[in-house]
Image (cartoon, rainbow, N blue to C red; front, side):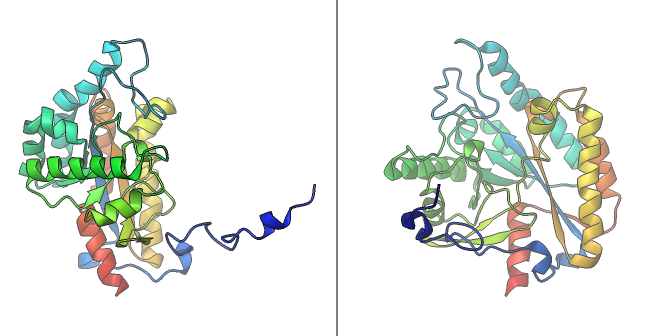
Length: 308
């Protein structure tokens, strides 16, 4: 069947992406990035402190980690709760050992319910990233813009009051967005968003309210993806983190600085039989020269300085 004239006249049919949010760009063709003190790899560790309501509606879909069985699904609810009451402290200990300050993605509901957790994070000078209201309030096309704005504003107010930080980074629950999300985030004063997984480095995005930046927050190097979804072993997880770092480290020798981002969920990696895998991966990474353990805001500012 031949294509219609209407199909051929699609206004954004062109080389690259079918939107104007950013310029399509191939990484090998970009100018090399220089990190502070001649570091080769910026290590960005992003744990998530999440709250999954027991009576989740799961609309328009169930996010990763959602309740699975009939109400009350105490088996899954209490496992998620394990991360906030036990697992996160094992993760903190592993990061403290190497002096790694994380950027922790926090549901606003966690700050309301467990303020002591926010205090533990800020005591370590961790950066607070907004992770939405909770894991049952997703951002999606069916959400009216005025309601989405209320979700964003409420989330930021709660987290800024609880942490005393400016909170300039955003990760949508389940990385889900509407067409308005980026514009609303920029209007709310966000510097960066972690929902887009199409690059190894930061890049600038266009919004109706000025620049916003995408940070390379991966789903591949994620404990939930590897250990729960893909059913790999703990040794597999360790080896994949090390392999990811090793290649980025080799690339950095000739192509400029790289970002090694690690996504973590305390209810997954904070289990007693799993934490060793993370500890061994971090030891492997931190033994290399030129590794800069930094927050998302620090990485973005260094990247932006090199773009001027």
